[in-house]
Image (cartoon, rainbow, N blue to C red; front, side, top):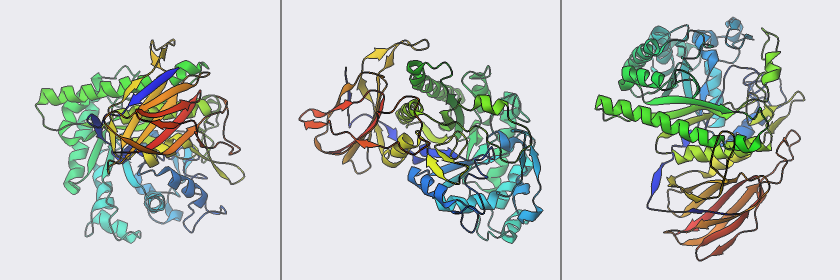
Amino acid sequence: MKSSITLDKYAPVGQIDERIYGSFIEHLGRAVYTGIYQPGHPSADENGFRQDVIDLINQLNVPIIRYPGGNFVSGFNWEDSIGPKDARPRRLDLAWQTIETNQFGLHEFMQWLDKVHAAPMMAVNLGTRGIDAARNLIEYTNFPKGSYYSDMRRKNGAEAPFNIKTWCLGNEMDGPWQIGHKDAVAYGKLADETAHAMRIVDDTIETVACGSSALTMPTFGSWESTVLDIAYDQVDYLSLHRYYGNQDNDTPNFLAQSLDLDDFISGVVAICDAIKARKHSKKTINLSLDEWNVWYHSNDHDAQDAKWQEHPHKLEDIYNFEDALLVGSMLITMLHHADRLKMACLAQLVNVIAPIMTDENGGAWAQSIFYPFMQVSTLGKGTVLTPIVKSETYGTKEFAAVPYVDGVAVLNDAGDTATVFAVNKSLDTPQEFTIAAGDFQFDQVTLSSQFAGYGLKETNEDGHMRLADNTSYYLADDGVHVTLAPASWNVFQIKVQ
């Protein structure tokens, strides 16, 4: 089969906000305890932070991390997580029905962020709490000194304010599983009033309102419209959450789910712009895909889990090679929407539906999905070019015409390097792939890599998976010609003029 992508320097999609490569740490399962925080572990530093995990996270170049939830935040009292550890209360976490010890809290999170070179995306509890707790929290984190909560922070060891700039106004508030879930009018009013109070304390913050919890929710569409109609002036971003699974073991259909994500993002953009037009507003609401991933492997185990344990094994999907291919296609899809999708959080970062795992023997290892994420977060910087992709298609039970090849091109800020990401979804046929120069002149191929040759159900628990060189390419007058292996993730960098 033959396929191609043409680079057009005069048709940019938009500048990439690198926060699109964010991630997520929730007080859920072993994400925190025995994940990023484990005093007494051989690699732990003086704060109890696991250095082996930090080293892996730093390879991912994650610029922003959402915290502390997730469903967890809707029952969270932030005051429980500050002050002397021996005085912090043990609480029942109703969201995941576990015991939260609060030994890792706000100050620990901010200290840990310095180690992984990331900024915080903090969520406030709009389930069991609301305006008062949120305005007190931002006073604690962002006000310099001379007030009750800012001086409490200083007493607890942080003289300088944390200056947290990105705030989620609750989590999945239309979901009946959410503690304190609300209808769209009630949530819209609460989000509007909470953001207003927080901005009085710090008018430099950005806020993220909850969109509908899923595309399949009966509230989808009407929820977004109602919430934005009420809270438009106090909101900067609208959130989206999307997970995919292969419960039916139908790999061609599973790999096609990136088309669903594309439709989802486009639909939410249309809703935001419809409200903008109706309000005659000059303000544009952008999107935050602050939960996304593959999630289904651990469902049966989690259904049998005993309640009220400390940091039990929950949502510990062990990802296989086909999961990495879909994650790659989802990243490509996200870049297609770089003009409006400005933040995203791979959910989550360690142990819980995560690219990084820690095991019972004290080790830490990278899952299959680690590799496409690492390459895009490292190399996908600059301006996305409008994707002109030609590919044969196939059909599935959900999708009539699925391109065998997903692709996107990014031009760096200096304008001298183009990076192309591509997935071949054909399970048995290579692609003769052309990267057409278009209006560019190609000078040199500096990277030609592939993640290929593994069984679809193969996992990386023993650490054998690796990125490899793709030496099949050659440079011609019309562009780069290369063979994409069946079922493969591919990255190319080209010096251009």
